[in-house]
Image (cartoon, rainbow, N blue to C red; front, side, top):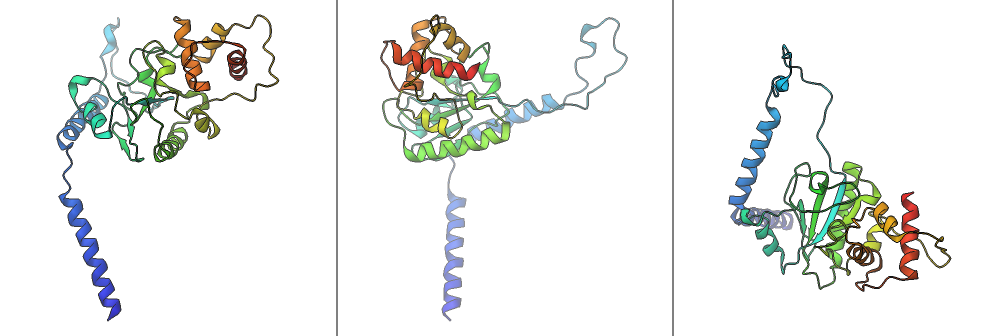
Length: 276
């Protein structure tokens, strides 16, 4: 009798949860429909054949030939941001309003909830005008992750835990190099400062996401070492040298001061050697 009662109770609870789930209204149903429509249009473009007939070649090719050796382009960088907004719902709305012209592949809320907003193989509008090394179209080769944070607060433990879990999946899925996990402020130092100096980059680097420097106590910087050239080799755009140096300090020293001295030089030299 007790068994039957327990079974009925469990069955009732399961049915109740199903009803609650079915009644949950997704406020983004309309924009989700728009997402699917756009994805279908891109799928139609990929399925189109033959491709451009001859591409104005002379003589004209007699027939179309499609190669059998191809796959999807894949992301090779991860760019981490903070939203500079006050809540996850605010950011989700920002990324689903056409006029904003901004987006990201993932949004991670303060409680650790992860919203996957765009297929990893599609191009988000998250990096903007930016540069890393010789790469000037960062959007086309990267995944953008936005952390729900106003830029003046610590990042929650739940948020960082979810981020690390997500980064593990992305690094494995796309074989992303360790050095290619960077911040928005690194690739756009003159106009962006996210994620803020409170972001735990060393925590990520210890798990294999981004490079870090070793103990610099015994580091001797050789004569003639150029900080600017080292910043450039790491990837920073040194057109505005002060902005590049500030971005470097924010990332690797959690420091927002504009001074530059021997300790900074040692850290930079230690990192520079990892790129040789």
